[in-house]
Amino acid sequence: MGLKGIKARYIRFTPLYSRYEGEECKGIQLHVMDRNALDPIAAALRLLELIVKEHGEELVFGSNYGHFDLLMGNETVRTHVIQGDIAAHIEHWRNDIEEYKMRIKQYLLY
Image 1 (tube, rainbow, N blue to C red):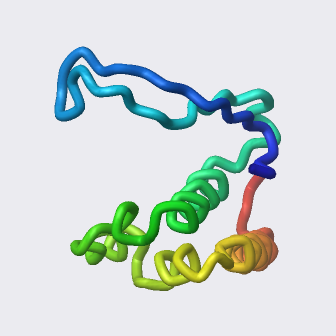
Image 2: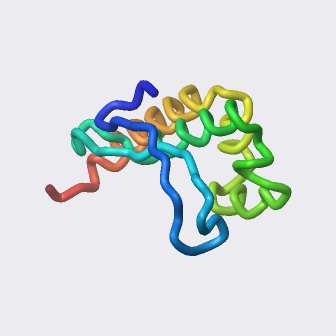
């Protein structure tokens, strides 16, 4: 998956209750190996990108993607996930954060 600080392993399980009770389900189990190296936001968005690539945007966002867009602030994140270029968007965020840190540095007391 190429995510720093995290490993994924294939898992199969059968829920004892809920919507899929008694049915074998497949997925991945995530293990944090190095919390200092892990960027949880980037990891979550990269996982969304991989799921969209494998299963389509309908599975991830459904027909009511407006709620996701509302949580993200606009449709930009969803669009980048669907297009498969979320890494570029995350890098843009990082640049914005560094610029912000430089701008506020003079106002910090410690």
